[in-house]
Length: 166
Image (cartoon, rainbow, N blue to C red; front, side, top):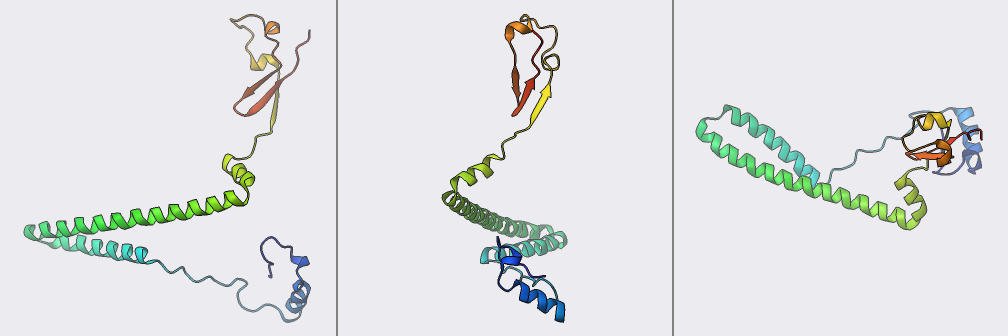
């Protein structure tokens, strides 16, 4: 079915009703959604894939090789692994840089919303309990009336105690 641009409402779009009439009269052929083409891997990703394939084939050759050949294959393996490690690190740095850029843009666009999503929603639940449940009856520090406890805050939740009879 037809969906409008992000954030819009279907029935407010100018072509919505004409599309509905067309769908009712003629029906809908084909798939509802167009499949997105697979993303083309960048140069580093292609090289990493090629290096992994080479390492796998090298492992097979290593299993079948004689002891003299194994030394040379081990040296080649170390070179390929160091190159793969370098490419992986570079790709991770690139991804982190992209994330920082998008976070910076989100912060500049609306710092309050960014901070709210960063810190999470405020917990606004209120749990009711009696004084006896919150504070044990035998208190080594003295009587409860001397403390005049009305509320206790525990891990972000506000526990309101029922007032004791005076």
